[in-house]
Image 1 (cartoon, rainbow, N blue to C red):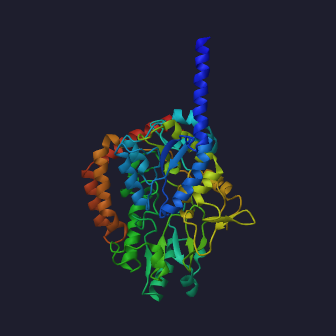
Image 2: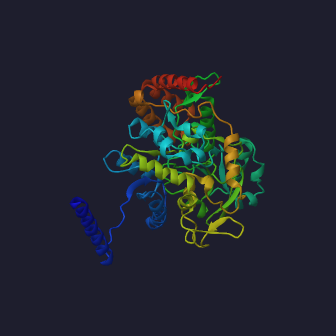
Image 3: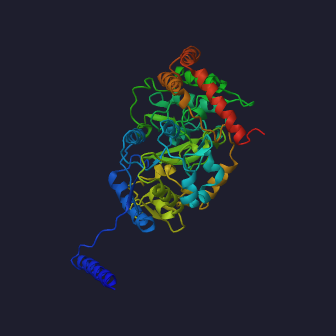
Length: 493
């Protein structure tokens, strides 16, 4: 009885203490699990990102008892440089969008956590939203290490963005361009009629050559591949393929005809600034997620048209091109998967990530679309939306059908899939050779893929150096893993 009375007294003291704290205005603030998520908000001000972060945290605190912090990254290059630097230290980094080739680099460095168990326990909504086949395209040796983005995975090779006013001025029909010969006729006309401007430049993404957007194995958004697959399942050097050789010959011919920049290494400005000033007619680009084969849009006051002579196909690494991962620096892998699950299933969060804050960065239209909130200021989040987890549950931007995301999903499912789709090469056993070969490629790529060097001579020099540095050994190891992957997934049957 005495123990019982003592217990009641203690409860009363605790209750009084809590009440006293409440009365005095010093009630304890709820404690939340804090997570750090690296999301590429490229070129967006810190003020805008923090506005989105605050809105998202109101949801995650209520739903999960979790707060999330988005580190500041101003450019794509800084994003991966800083993210990899964080991973090289004990600094907390729970979630990361590991696109642009970073997925395999992080895996080889031992920075990724396996996700099968976490997904099964805490990611049921992800499984429903993304789909089993797409999810397991991020397997490595049969173990899941990433969650694919839900978005447009199709790309159109040989895609060119051109100034509409110049096309109209000389009676050039962009919609009639179906062959490379017809494309070259346009370039030749512009070169002759407008000699003071550059005809063609490499794309809008930093580090891209003229061929980066045109050959799928050179796609920097997926990560460069050293091999292509023959019909019999044999892997061969991508740089000895006829596709690469003929592409080098074409850009070398364009350089000799004066279509390209005279000094490709000296042009530091982005293509948008040069277009606005009237110094550039066209640039190469991978198809944007919301564009069709032809699309009209503006850069400043300059009307542009996007043209692709070839049909679309899935990116060469497909759904493993831009996966979200949980890193070995995570303070709580379980909480990280719960947060990812909410990112992939909560439309309010997804729209914040894709388009920012309603009324500030975008607004809804009467017909159910969204558009820029202010005429004088474009939505800074729009051009980064393809990086976000689940665009299928986001709003539809004006100019597209309201069932746009259903169309994208159907197009993904019906697009052609290459023989390496879903295969991820673990180069850890040949890491030294792989690093040397990639260094050699980066030494030559701008010279060759900008047309500055004779492709036969320059290409042979590059291949000789690659082979002496272990390229054949790399291909042998990749072939072994590729064969095992095909057997495990019953490919080629």
